[in-house]
Every structure is written in C-alpha cells, then in structure tokens.
Amino acid sequence: MKITKNEPNSFVISYLTLRKCIGILGVTLPFILFFGALLFFNQGIQPSISDYYTLPQLVLGI
Image (tube, rainbow, N blue to C red; front, side):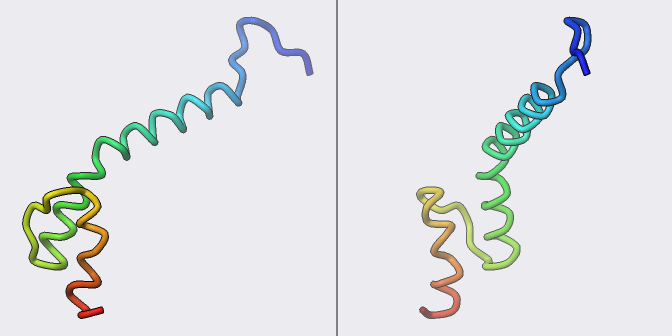
C-alpha cells in the first residue's frame, strides 16, 4: 500500500494521541491523588506528591 501526502499516517496519529493522554494524566494526577486520599484515607493536602504514595502504609500500620 502506498501512502500519499494527503493520507495521515496511523502511527503519527496514535503517537500524538498517546502524547495527549500522557499530558492529561500528568496535569490531573495531583488532583486524582488529592481526592483519592481525601475519600479513601481521610487525609488532606500532603506536602509533596511523593507523600501520597506512603498513605496506604500509614493507614495499615506497615
């Protein structure tokens, strides 16, 4: 199959979609972590994003 200039390449489209999805996740990750900690662990804002990863250990007493 010959690709012409007007026909978009499916790899380029999927690469751009992947970049957009990673960008959206990167922007929304702090909010997801905050609301998850608030709902599941009854914790407020942590000093850093890394502190959200240790919340389950604090709750379980590990």
